[in-house]
Image (tube, rainbow, N blue to C red; front, side, top):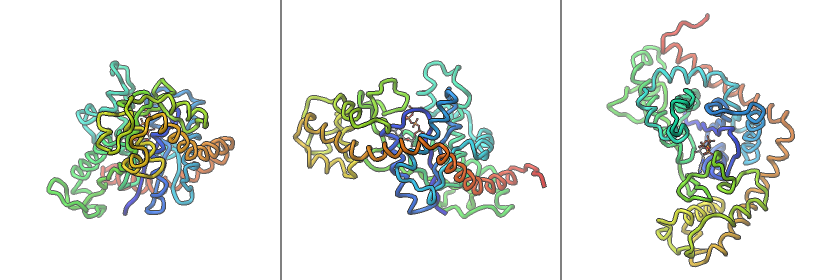
Length: 354
Ligand code: AQP
């Protein structure tokens, strides 16, 4: 059974990268298969969060989901901490994943910085919780940006090891599903699916507006580096005007964007916002200077983002409605995750209350 799961952390300013790389792509999927979209607050506390700010940001990400067009009747929208199965399964995966696997994760190295000794244990174990988020629903597809690719590979490794370690038990209990990708390294019946990342389109990695070699990020200290979903038209225009570029005009062919990270990024943003390919954009703007391209990009960004910005503002003024969406979503999410955890406890051999 195909099923989509994805999440966004409530950790500050949602930006254009989060929107184009993830949230905007969640919307069409809800008409294709069951979809579960989570506000991953347990992930957020792997680094310090001011409690009042966290509460506000959880509601803000929920508002962004709704304003982007995710329909709470079609999709399940909830925050992670309301469904206790995430934390429980993460513990089980802490015992499946190997230290060596986690030590290879580049995001941990980036986020922990030089002083790894002082990073929280949660930051190190973050990918296990992410695997739990996905596999508590036995989700098969995860739309994310390029930066999450390594974590999704780890999710597959965890599922694979679990399926292997408990192969006999899964069979005995009659809980397996036939392996859709027969492979000599795996048993012919699996309990956990091998999840596929969905990383596609021209916006899988939006870069900082100040440095075309760095990812656009919520935690970049420079606000000029990103377009926030809460920015108004003036702020968007100012940031695009100040965006770093090189002195050359835009090339006519995509190949001409190689070695020009800033130009490549701005063309990619235009393409993603207009739902065009980069080549389409260059067919229109190739040969032109940034002084002509930037105002066109600003206008497009404002047209696309302003209605969402308005709707987010309206929704965040009514926390009661947002909290009701989250509660309803959490109940529907728990109804899927509870039986999965029940099976997992049986597979592991735990004695449950009866
Ligand atoms: N620059 C980006 N381009 C495309 N996609 C991106 N995503 C993040 N940055 C970009 C995607 O957005 C989703 C949610 O991300 P997250 O909030 O879970 O965490 P993150 O990847 O750590 O995001 P940030 O904004 O970069 O936060 P910080 O600054 O805290 O590291 C994911 O699908 C992600 O791929």
